[in-house]
Length: 200
Image (cartoon, rainbow, N blue to C red; front, side, top):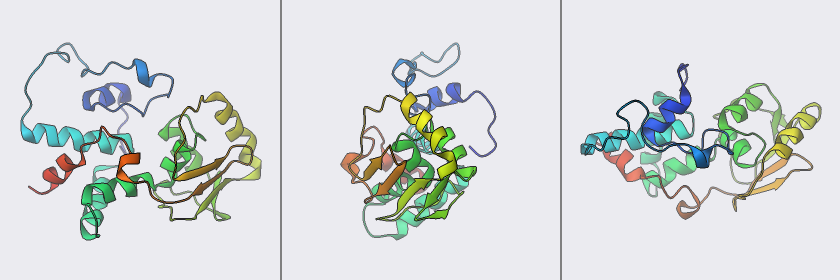
């Protein structure tokens, strides 16, 4: 996603990405691909299915091709199920945690909040969206930025909460308790297809 500047909703529809747009719009987004023939049914090849799933997960977390491949390679070297470890790594990104906690409407906004130096990790300024949080890390918002983030929090109808995060909206504080288990992450992701894609 690093240099893509085209129409993002069209791109997301093509790959079935659901939770990148404004939370209020996700339920109404059309699920077929964009374009005149987007709704036509064609049986995709195995490779097409694998590529689509890889792009779907990559675009959901707003990471570049190079970053995503690196996450896969690192996950393949660790103990545990490669696909699950890869998703856990993506969920541990600072921008994703800021988004999950409801401190941003979209992941793009969460990335911008981090990039602009509004957040601290364990009391130290971190402006790298891909920073990976560890168990027990505490994310807070700079005092001067709290009013802005609180306005964002109030504008979001947060129906979801996550067992691996403890969120104090009043204090603009997030505690990263642990990495999520596979059953706690998006059930629609078919990470096995990603493994098959990179195993060729």
